[in-house]
Image (cartoon, rainbow, N blue to C red):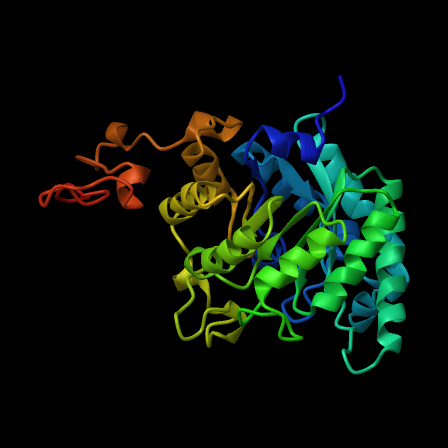
Length: 345
């Protein structure tokens, strides 16, 4: 039987997305910090294939094709403009191969850095870039498209139109430093306008950690009756600097700010309880985060066969559950610390 599509799955319950690709592949030595372009799809396909496998085993319902920053103009800044078709095509093929009949594959569009709100001609230029990517990715068999990391509402609308013109379900998400688009449109109004124009799912992704993303998504949830998505980063941001690209640690000193698996599990539960339909994650979120999120949502992915059982470790006397670590259950004053070591450990 054919796989259930994204909208059918959303009607049945929460859909779990995958994690972050670009920063993790940079850590592994396959993506260059700075340009962050996805030539890994043609230069080191096995590295990309392996990360997809990890997310699938962790319980992701959707694998996103690594076509972030894969528009012709952006690739051109890193010397890969002539490889735009090869990169987009390879990225979808790899995701499709790994997903098999277990997960959906989302084609991916993102901000192009070519949109200029003061230059009307930039709209046509950006639309052509999106159309080119959509045509190649669609020819490789994606199930739906995700347009992500948009700051300007108008660029998000251009991505939406390109996807809907090709006849696919569209998920459109924003990455915002403020509580409004680059034009100053409040997030709730952005969501409503996109839904009115045909978006099937709207939401926020990247940039913010769970604590600083959920309030934005709550505004979208109030504004629309359709499906809403939240895909925060796996790093901790601050009240005065809610967006991680503005942190002094960005991009190479973020490691100490990594969220625990318990914190990401707690996000998944809070997101579901707040009416989020598509629960995912982005930069900094890796397979153990996704597995913790899946388990917090009541699932048992393949990776759960190796979920922690620290009671069997000779150096651990007692351990808290992920629920306790995330603060979802009251703890007694004398509750043991996680991983309390024995003498000499």
